[in-house]
Length: 539
Picture 1 (cartoon, rainbow, N blue to C red):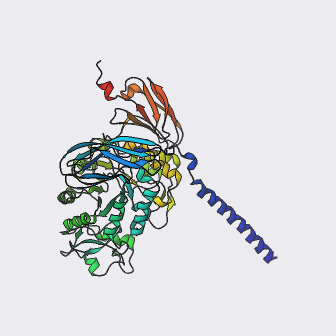
Picture 2: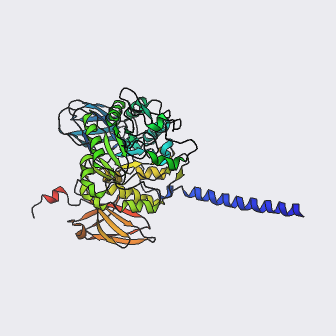
Picture 3: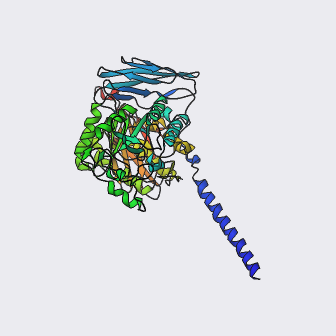
């Protein structure tokens, strides 16, 4: 009898486990969001995408890849290139060095068997770089401290092979976890064994038409407990390395200790700076972007790094992290290309809504060359370590995330594993009309023009006179939202264009109304807005 009962219990438990397993499969299957895709597929005819303006300092190495969709093969041309630059017509890569300051309008073209597309690119040779918010990828939100050289290369290859590069995504940034100990000709930070050849890595990524970023801190140790650009010893060999308090990758680790508690022991400034050595090494490797990470940020260490980056003949975007104090906004605006305004983002509605809707006070300080950074994008497969998971954001929350970051003119750094990117995530990141809002050369941050309860409407002026409008609903229920042309200060008849669907919705001389999903957005453009032609008309 007991055996019979045991057998029945096994059957019941098996059935229950099977039901639980089936439920888990349903949950996993629910992460397939393809039915929510709004972005139309790119046409087979050519279209040039990405930034319409690019800044470079006189004499610095120049790398710009013409981002274009359409079937291959494709032939590129560029009329009016300044002296010192050349174009590879097969790859669309413009390289070289320009010595003479000035603004040059270059007529780009992309041609395939189905047609030809032309567009202007303004090359500005002067003091400013990052004239549009950087668009790229960062390793932290998927691999954190465990990142390897092969994962970086895999991400670069995936950015090209999946077509992200054809939409203007161009930076591959290595976050914390690459550092070994000091050495080499400059006594600079050298990579640990996870990165066997940093120079070869940057060359390979540059050969793909992409740019490379790196990570450091003015502390003696980073957040992940690798060495920073300061030391507690004059030779740069931190005491904890000399004492052997590290793992095989020179990450601070006490024998039998608790890494997560112990790592904060190296989160402090040291008396000896190796900033000059590190910057020279990064320039020699061919680095294009620096994330400089500590808290609280301070003028001395920001200015030190700024001055050193200005001394080299290479343009390296200077990005500060994290939680920049608003009271020192003029400092970050003056000396940094990007500055993180908060702590780390997470893939939750609470996190993205709290961060995204708290950026209004940075409006006066956000402009070409200098961008308030709302942190990385948490779409796709994320996880901060070896185990990745699909973002916890719903489809509507992801549309809100990308729409808001685009309107804010925030740097756009993908945080997921690009190689595992699904069709829905690709559609979020390859909508050129949405990306154009982020990359608009005017570089103005959107501002709230109407707000009531949990609904807010953001407006962003664009260079051609049109206006991008985001209707955001933070409530748990759908909401009807609308705005009049008078509230926006727009004149005459306007075409209302849905940017996610890339289609015209209506014409109006009065107002526009729409229903917005819970935690969702409707992102439109009003055309022609107040175009230059209207502005110059006589009353």
